[in-house]
Amino acid sequence: MGSIGFWNVRGINSTNKQNDVRYFLHNNNVGIFSLLETRVHSNSINKVHQGIENNWSLVHNNSVHDGGRIWVIWDSGNYTIDTISIEAQVIYVKVTCITGQMWWMSVIYGFNRVNERLPLWTSLRSMRQVVNGPWLIMGDFNNVLAMCERVGSVVSSNELRGFQDCVDDSGLIDLPAQDAFFTWNNKHEPGDMVLSRIDRTMSNDDWLLHFSDTTTMFHPQVEFDHCPCTITLSVGVVRRKESFKYFKMWGKDPQFLPLVQEIWDKSMYGIKMFQLVKTL
Image (tube, rainbow, N blue to C red; front, side, top):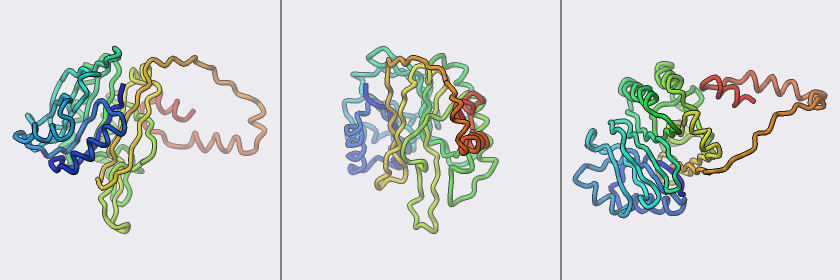
């Protein structure tokens, strides 16, 4: 089973970009991929699709936003994807793998303005009532979740509040990610550079139960301004639960209590169970 991934490509009409994406898919064994900010108008979809992966299946949201925002392409030999709902900022699908694994998946590309993203938060809250299994949420939210997720530009509490409330209400958890923390930058000179973490992968509790060994990787941007992301699943791995054991000798180390205090004093964002597990 291949990886899952997404990439904000800021337009995919050029042959060079199509070649870059095709190389990335093959080099990273990707079986399901989402292209964001495609900027492909409806009359060019077939041509561009052929330039990337002609034999793969495609669902897009051009019917609700002709400028081209979200594409989901997949290897139909290994996956079956049923479309649940298509909106301007999100596509909801249900994925069934050839191995029998099933999950819900939401691909996000949020609008640029805070007030325009409000319908997206409402939509995710509503979808939580529908989902009855593992749920993967990924994409470019165009919104940071914490103050520390942007440098070079001010983060307002109003911008954070809507996203944070949505995450809490929807029971979503950030999936651990490797490599790049900041997934976007404006490509300006150092004195005028803005870096931001607006691309992310999230899930519900059921996802963690079924795919506990999920690995998320944000790859180098190359000439793009967004990092491409891949998500690798380890299916069918059952690990024996082991109890935690505390050894008294740890407490004799003079650095032990200050270290424990330092960790517990850190702010962890997310649902209460995630905060506890992350701190431990």
